[in-house]
Image (cartoon, rainbow, N blue to C red; front, side, top):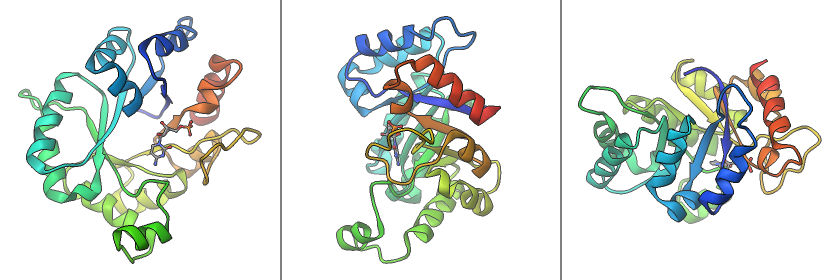
Length: 234
Ligand code: C5P
């Protein structure tokens, strides 16, 4: 899979998602989409099957974190849904990540890409120290989680575009960096704190940018998507 823009379909229903994606029907290629917890919990696996049927690649962003056996079985279900990328929390430890890879691998040896969330971008040094008693510098924690994910057989991480270069240094250029926190230079930041433009994320070495509101809330979502594609892929 090459570099791409992944559009975050953060909608509460299938209707709202289809109404949004119908705007893209004139494009030669269906956008790569991300389905998160909100849409998945509202509509269940059927929304994944339907978007696949319509020709979209899918990043299913459910961030699994449980005991290894439970995650292994859940991943086996996701592999049958034929998603392209799915994810888990690296904090679930090496045993959980290895079990996830095992569960995700189909009988023919193929599997969706599996990436790890390191520290959520909503976590900062202060909350990490206070709430989960992790006292190392957050950058060190993120890189350690990324390396552990790699050693467990995963394909990459979700991270800030600001971390993409360092992750590639530590884990190799083939280890995927999937980066949210993307904004146009003149746009609203919303609740995202550390943001980058699509062009800067390209410079930083991101493999995939995940873009939500700059596309979904744009007056012309198709134009915003095409601008992301042009700036990020060129
Ligand atoms: O609207 P916006 O572009 O901020 O959307 C970013 C998407 O990426 C959302 O679906 C959000 O849940 C997701 N995400 C994120 N930061 C992370 C992990 C996921 O913004 N660390």
